[in-house]
Length: 100
Ligand SMILES: Cc1cc2nc3c(=O)[nH]c(=O)nc-3n(C[C@H](O)[C@H](O)[C@H](O)COP(=O)(O)OP(=O)(O)OC[C@H]3O[C@@H](n4cnc5c(N)ncnc54)[C@H](O)[C@@H]3O)c2cc1C
Image (tube, rainbow, N blue to C red; front, side, top):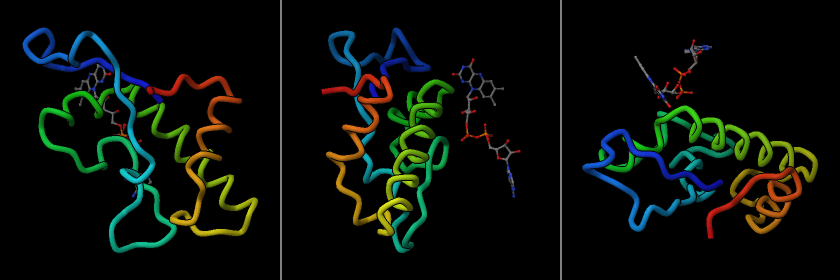
């Protein structure tokens, strides 16, 4: 998903008024299999956290994690085995705008 709001705007802003995406690998909990972590619980530095922690970003992460879990369950695979291109394709099919 694409997101761009920052708590500290206008002092801190996404460059050129653009947006950014949160990679699937950010949701994979280090040291655990089949555990997806989202929202306030993903690891970022402070500047990034003040954007990613906001509600609409959390909603997007939740949709991404839920879709990933459904794809894994359907295919009988672990979360680290999921093809991210397939996840992106499903999210686009569901009407999600993904950052480039
Ligand atoms: C005062 C305040 C104002 C804010 N204002 C804004 C704003 O204007 N705009 C904006 O975009 N963001 C705002 N935010 C930030 C945003 O609301 C949060 O960062 C966001 O909701 C975090 O989502 P989350 O899913 O990580 O956590 P949460 O929204 O806290 O969800 C976690 C959920 O897990 C549940 N839970 C906890 N432990 C357990 C358990 N053991 N078993 C089952 N369930 C459990 C909790 O009850 C809760 O429902 C604000 C935050 C605060 C605190």
